[in-house]
Image 1: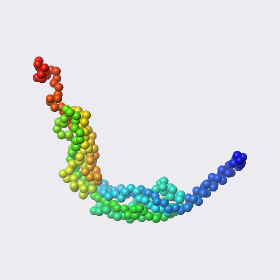
Image 2: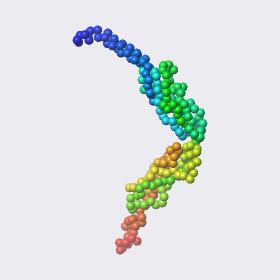
Image 3: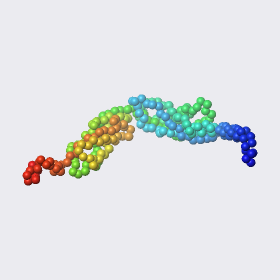
Image 4: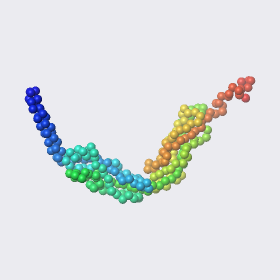
Length: 237
């Protein structure tokens, strides 16, 4: 049996590889129907516009094509780039997806059967800006006997809010609040970095962090007198 495999081994190995190659070619030309998730890419908007209603990042496309092509589509999916009018709209605009939005290879042998969703919803808004003050939110206070001397101070005291122009208008009279800050275990002059919480998920705060300074002091009765301040009777002078 061993001699059978070793005799004309090179010819037999070549025949096996050729057979596997032919099988792969024939099998790869067989058409299949597959659903593939492709990335949805929106064109870059000018700084004066922003997307306020995003359709999502992926669209499921159903293809009928040779198996080999569908295999590579699963590894390197084509991109879906819809074409639409880039202007501010008061309500979401519906965009029907078509084959032309896909960046398919020029020699693509197959067809696109469907998109899911078949229609995407997109809304664009003009961008507005407004300066709003910062409000420091305190969480746990300092450990006794330490206490705050005055109010905490944020730097900067005002930040820039940027977002949809209709939502920026609602920020008048509102503040950008910091995350709750803890003074537990702190003494003396305390400096903390605090992240700001946006009042609206579509509004960006610039910067999104501030530096907070708090002065902690001990009450006078808790301060031990210096040795030179004691009188002859052992009391404080």
